[in-house]
Length: 334
Image (tube, rainbow, N blue to C red):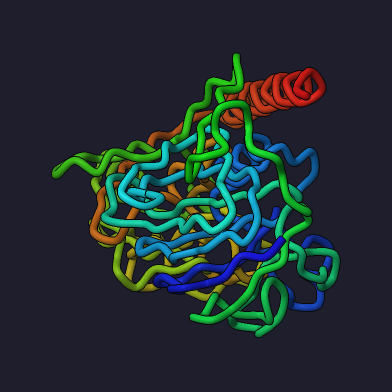
């Protein structure tokens, strides 16, 4: 099955769960920045493995399907529609041959993940189908989509569900598949709470910085990308200035450069860094953080390492339950 790119959108690129095992060579993990939405979309589309999804940023593409297939849209709501009719988020949707999926204004979140049955058929590079634009490899020709591109998928085509043969698309409920999209509110003045664990260099910051960190409101800078989120707010001062030996960093590490403005490292972070690490975002809240748009506000809430681990275990248990629901539904469907 093929999908024609009629309009590319702001930055639409294929992502999976990342390119692990190559950081020692300077190759970032990358992958979907909102792994929760990526995985939910795959499950709803009927994929049992980590197939590549299309990560859509802010202004979505226009995609035309040449054959009927199943899709799912998860994450931020960018007003998806087929024709004049809205396509629901976080649902399994059958799309008829010739239908065109478009996106409109942003309702909430920043990124939508588009999954198709069978996944997008691109060759893996270093074990991953993720796009690394800075390196020019992975995904679809190592770049975001352009007008005129044609995407292959692993689905040869799907017959329409009962009663949907004359429709552009149809929503088929998956009983028991209730999801938590983890998308921050876009209401004016809203502040998203992001949970963090104290970092290795917490004690190296002044008492004033330690007190301000969990109380202050930070704004996401427009100079943010998939490598790191730059924050604007109260400066965090160290007790003693000086250079640090570079250490390993990870997705969610909160570094503080000399200007005192925190940077949260994201999916395409470097493998090591020399700025002091005041905190690490709890893994369970990384999807929430990834859906914040520039100029939105956040506040950090400290939790213990044990609490962060329990929260992640709870989410992974929920994901495993949803996977069982999806598999049981597909096995019982004709």
